[in-house]
Image (cartoon, rainbow over all chains, first blue to last red; front, side, top):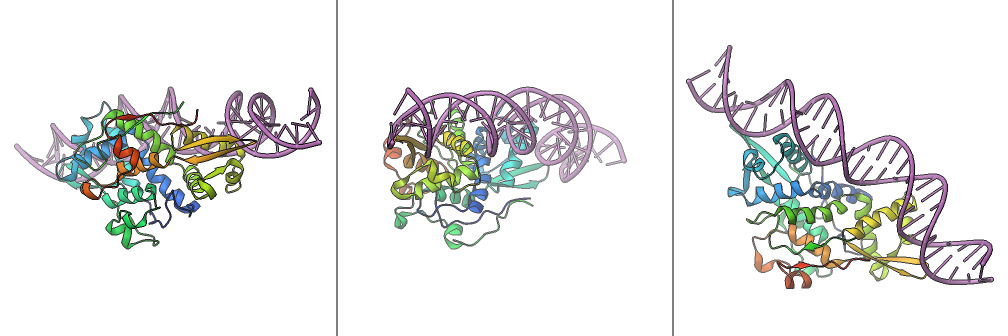
Length: 136
Length: 136
DNA sequence: CGTCTATGTTGATAGGTGTCGATTCAGCTC
DNA sequence: GAGCTGAATCGACACCTATCAACATAGACG
């Protein structure tokens, strides 16, 4: 259900243009970010105590119905940007930091590789496809 | 015609959740990135000699009509991610590096502010709205 | 088991988006 | 000015998406 996002060697600002495949995978993630509600959901989850939040913590922040919030969370989940975890009656969502950091790296300028931010999973898996462990 | 993108103090991964306004402005930019064609256009322009490319350099890379490419370039331009410049018969597009770097910063983890990437215009204008000088 | 609460799913609908062909516009060259 | 080339715009169409109300599902609790 979730996509596989390749770890990239090229950045948007490198001399190596993105391949059609890379662009296609990345676009799915950026498209998920391309909605104000989902951006706020993401930051709300990250800002919430313990780095996780249940749906009931999130719906209150919007004047939207619960199914709509649930829909947006599904989009984020299928883009691999968050994971969900059921505990008792509640479903808790957490962000996937390395996934978001990967997107940041794609956008970051690459003219200064020495100071280039390196994130564990990103650095270790460069140029190799990495299965994104999203929720089942 | 172009949007104003505020320089943010909060990141997606901070304890400060995005405001509705910030999220709305950012979403416009991320939405522009949420299409594989536009992502490739962006990287093609950046990778092109001199950091700029005319439309005729770009259309050849896709099996899409010229109006379609022109449409995608317009979306990128209105999102403030590229600027255009007419020289003689040709129109040259260039990326707006600090704008893309700003998006990278929003996504980048903020738990380590000392190593946080700082880009000229971003760092200098923190928390103040910055007019994005896109093409007229 | 029945009920209650919290989430997810479905179906419907209005509006947005990507694409193209046809046309128009801008600037060069003759 | 006429004609040519590169690029933008327009109108139309198919497809996608955000949203809601209604319903279904999962687990807790009596």
